[in-house]
Image 1 (cartoon, rainbow, N blue to C red):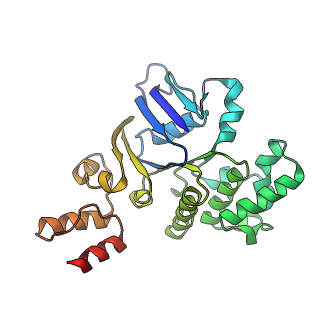
Image 2: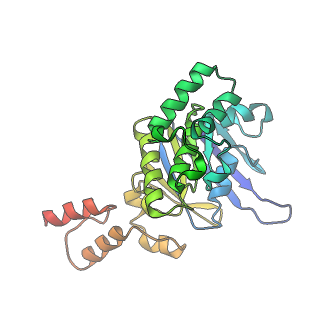
Length: 272
């Protein structure tokens, strides 16, 4: 779905590169999470994948289309939809269903098909009952789910989410994370979820860790999060159950260090 080769980017001439030779492939249907602290380059990477920014060096191919080709930019953004950090910046209408219809309307989709797509997208994100509501009356998590529905209605093959839970409370974050996991597992949409919350990465197919414009770790979540010292060294937290598993093992208990959830911890302890 996405093929990135030797990607380099800087915002201004004379400044150092924000991204320093990124190589990355994302397979169709993959659920990829990119984590890193502020300034690691992960949000810049998201904007480059959507064609908002253009590489200084290297290339990004989205389903075979080069983001440097301005004639393909509309097709690229239809293929790889983008969900931003602040849902208020992505909601444009005064009624939820009209907002979700905005993208398909701009694609010139017939009215009957738009109606079907709006209903289907709101069903997927669990917001059908709010279709007639004004977006400003919704919670942060609900607004973000409407923003995701608006992207879904355009039938993208891939969705890039740039820290979609950063401005939400814990309840809103859970709503959005459940929705993202559903899109991946049930709708088979390629997901690239960029976040700095470690617990949002535990169900991903693969985790990429970025620091200072480079990929420093990658692999399955259970492998990446065992690199506790490395993650802490670059300023990232680790799921607390993973830290607990390490401390229990260091104290002499025969327990796996590849534990990511409370349920897994309970199962391991019950087997001792």
